Amino acid sequence: MMKLQHLLTCLLPIVCLSGTSAEPSDADHPNVIVIITDDQGWADIGYNNPAVYTPNLDRLAREGATLVNNYVMPQCTPTRVALMTGRYPGRFGTQALAANNQPAFPIGTATMASMFKESGYETFMSGKWHLGSIPEHGPNHFGFDGSHGSLTGAIGMYDHRYHAKADTPYDPTWHRNHKIIPGHEDGTHVTDLTRNEAVRFIKQERSGPFFLYLPFHAPHLPLDERGEFVDTPTQPDPENPKRWLNEDKIKWFNDPRGLIQSEPSRDKRLLLATVHHLDSAVGDVLKALEETGQRKNTLIMFSSDNGPMVSSSKKGNYPNSIHLVKYNQPSDLRGRKLDVWEGGIHVAGFMNWPARIKPQRIEEVVHIVDWFPTLASLIGFAPSEAIAWDGSDLCPLLFGTGTLEERDLYWIWNTRVNRWALRHGDWKIVRYSKEKPSKASDWQLYNLKQDPAEKNNLAASNPKTTSDLHRRFVHQRSLDRKTKWSKPKDG
Image 1 (cartoon, helix red, strand yellow):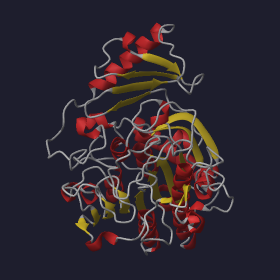
Image 2 (tube, one colour; image 1 turned 180 degrees about the vertical axis):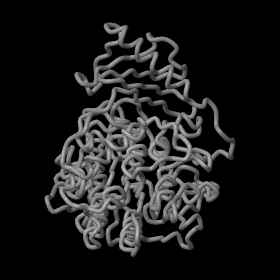
Image 3 (cartoon, one colour; image 1 turned 135 degrees about the vertical axis):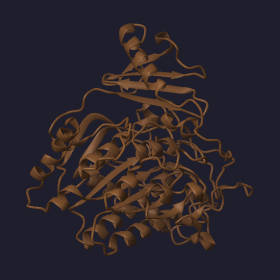
């Protein structure tokens, strides 16, 4: 009975907000596009930072529900686990806690894609999978009718190879439906390939709704924006090392407002150009929806997967790697990618659905584990077996019918866990140590409402609050699997 009431609470305002007499099938079964960017920090998007040129993403956020306190995990694979399963990655074992080529969760695990497929949606993804970097554990085994992109994580932007090393078992990785594409579609920027696949899929004729997953590789390293100079990797101009070769002639370095060229840092200009390119691809996806008359009843969900990388290795692990220093836009948030400080896990996010979601800023704390149960509620999906979601249904926030109960948000990171955090209400505890926090005094404590930059450790003056959050952490940690669920070959 409670589940039915929750579903009605979510679906009822959808019809009220529409202002139209849309058929129930339209109201209950929108097209859904989930866009995930890679390593895009809080300040690397225009609506959080006017120095960044992202007009399409900014418009989607402005005209939809901007998630002001949007949380993810501190790295790519863990965030993708949380997104696809609605569960914290620790629930699946240590292999899901960090970027990993091993299978993140078993075949047969309920995923967002399998839900849509079971509900009559056509499902497709293009981009970065990174939840098992072998064909035997690729996306088509988890609910996607079709897939395209890399099974692994980061790749060369033009050659689409996984690693600078030649002896890795995970390269080549560029595939369609788990079969390596001859020639790897070499010579076309990966952002353009993902865009092209999205546009093609949107324009196909179909009788029912679709689910499209677009995990873009950008702006993850290696940053490489050649424009029309496809045979010339991005490199400093030998005549002016403060600029990139051909920078004046490559459109991604030259936005209409002149924002990118006004940035004095060469390395930051490359990141801004990459994000401009990414935003243009999103604009082409929107154009395809509009041209096919599908824009109004398409729900677009957007988030980065973690905070910014900030600087790159001098050696470089990927094809055509460039050493970059402090190349992301600066932010007041503490930490970066891999951190459980806010800078590593607090990122831009929004949900846009013209037919149903009114423009608004949602201040309540949300997490990417919430997306699966929210979508399930939206389409009236009732799983045949109960799913132990860690996330909450966000419909009361999206449609103005209520608020969320306070709950715990929980982070750990690394296959040998050494970063720990939990947020409850405005309070957050953090610990960096190879040793599991065993008592309340092990933690640092911050009030994020008063101190979003996490500068003032209040643990000593708030022992009761620290003890309460420690107790909550112990409970969350007890739900995790402490070992791998399987032992495939290490990557």
